[in-house]
Image (cartoon, rainbow, N blue to C red; front, side):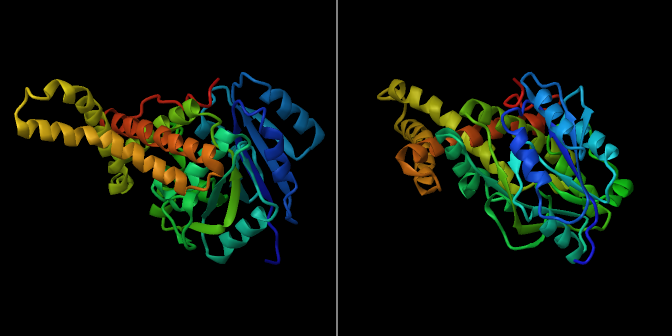
Length: 345
């Protein structure tokens, strides 16, 4: 690549005081010869995020702050994009850290393959034992069913892109993020990009360090919101339906009915017909089989040591079951105003 177009990084921020400075430093120290700017859209944080952001902006003129009083991610992204000036738009996250070659590689790939949106791998990491266990669940195909940006895939065209590196003109052509999509807005935007005849591209060489939720309660809330909005996607768009999305609801049904069967089994013994007792006993085994499967996947995960592997098994349960409940809600009733309450403090 002989020319280095200017890059505008756009970052929605809400309650990220503990992560923001490292994320910003990883952006502004990119090994890239083109001009760079970072536009941070500040939501109504309840921690010291705004103070950290103001300090960083005062120290570096390349940082611009915009207010996002509603705190919604798609609104934040649209505000930041409209405030930006460069021909390449890179969505970034305050919970992530970019490797030094990320911008160079992303821009090269964008032009090399003729894409309008490029994304890579979410390289989940952890600072604490629990967060490392959750990160191990992110890396496992058992955790999220194997999307390319979690577990990897060969380079090629994709349905959606993690974060996203865009040609600016694509927003003029297909529009900005849908502000009614409080989550899953990336997928919906990528659908419009693909429908316009442009490429969305996955490049496994683009790896972004990502810090997931720090505890199981926050992870479960995030999973519920993600499942709800994925159900909304499936409800709105035929292209958004996938058989793999039906597996977690079936799992939830099996575990739920099995849990009831565990309670009923002792009461039905010697009272119910033999065939019914057998059916109840089979159903009662479902939760035990699921727990055994999560334990096996936990021990097979990248978690280090016995404690992390056991915690990873718990992380799988905090991902699958809330996601399934959310998906059913979104599929049947719509996502409505479902929020990721794991981020709001």
